[in-house]
Length: 223
Image (cartoon, rainbow, N blue to C red; front, side, top):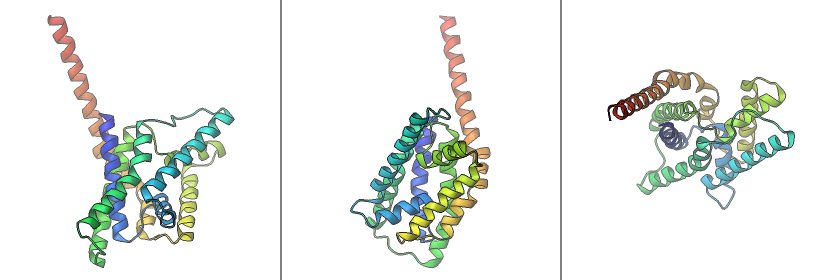
């Protein structure tokens, strides 16, 4: 089921962002900004990120209504799961790590965390995006700006990521190689997982559904 792909993908994203954060090399720009800002607030990162997502979603929905714009589906199952649970999962995984006695990691172990963290982040994004059940508000923001300004999406995404990085730096966020890789270098890896994991998985699911339908039809006809 597509819903399973979304849920598993979002859980994997939350876990991978946690690993990136524990590595100390920085997370993706949007999460980096929210972690930096939330560190100055009396609320957790997960709650703050949920608030920011709600503001972004409400702002885009209101803009569409005012300008009477139509386009890609703004809201879906994937939208809700991503905007609500990624930040909360990062809070939970981080608390679980420290609850088990985890502390500051040595440099070598921090470096080793980068590989599974980036791979998990790309696979999670691939699964949730391939399901095509709605995008997170921040992912939709670049698409909305590109449509309105007739600017290439890549340029719009770079602009939004750069804005997030600037805000993160202002609030003392940790921006590092993990942030750069997450922002600029994940595209090819996501495409790799799309081709070799997510799309084959989706095709397999469709094939099983078709077989079940055919079997049900044959059973009805034989009755």
